Image (tube, rainbow, N blue to C red):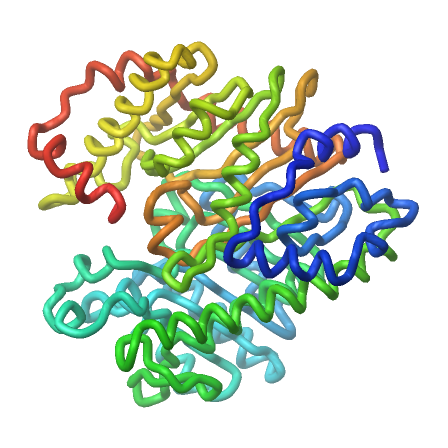
Length: 495
């Protein structure tokens, strides 16, 4: 093991408190022991991350950073056209414009040319069925024309049921919880992102996207999405939705507790199995210089995994280290803000959207007040940092690019004396109340000793921060409508 990795993981050696999924993985760790971490690659020093997540060892050359929305779209189209065995798409929704239609036509052509190709799509039920023309209607022709080759699933939150399901109008019914994961998989390559499959995300909405060429990781996400599809609603050729053939409980009928218990068991059993398998695989990969730990968060069904790992990363940042954190929507959980204030010793740079770059800016109705609500939350956080005499350590930046909106999230961590990031988190989580308690999320924790990859990650962060300005003064002075001030504390866990 390199000196770098010994130094890195020593800083994060404190064991996590067993809870939810992490408890399951730590129990498995205790059963198999540490002997699977020994070998020439020095994996034995990957202490606490190995206790809380499966690990996929690879080389930095297998990872590509995508910077621009157009390049993201072009990659989706190119990979779809070249796929031979499988395409797996997990997103909040698929848009209905020309670019989205062209993407669907690419899927159609690939299915026609490759009769063995399987296409699995997982979207959110409420967002994916909103309006007369929607994600479901866009993909229904593929379901009808290609039979068993195509599986379209719509995740339905178990919190939307009874009178609420009958009376809550579109858009409002999305507040209770969504399928928010963004995973795009083509044969043995997987893109982890925070971007949805719609026009803005293909043109002028900035996000992050990482392409990983690794069959074991692609297998993991393909199987993981299939597990979620099992307790989601299956779209049939007659356009109706029903139970998956391996599932017996509708999310909005019967008892919520029964659905939650069964869904949680399905995911934790799967994660345990993968965890055991990966310990053996780590032995044979002696030339790895990069390690990927998939993290999931499903607060709706009682799985808190990503949020616990994220909190530990924040709390274990040591003096002399640096941390860059980005979110499209500044609504950090109180626990995250308290951790940054009281336990994190790193110099922190927080990047968020300027109100002009917020996707809700100018929206009709209450949604139009969301950018102001994010400013209010950031202001409260900053003022608390000042009171605790920590504002010298935490700086705020706002992204603004004319004609663009901002949706990028994640973090970059730098060890003391390191000029390049040693770790990054990337995925669908905004680190907010929704991400932890309401939506289905996934991101990866990537640790690398590959200088080329670290340089590419640094270039990614530089591009985002280059379009930002320091924002402490603006946050404090920006006017907030009184009605936003009155309701933000009540409704902040819904946006």
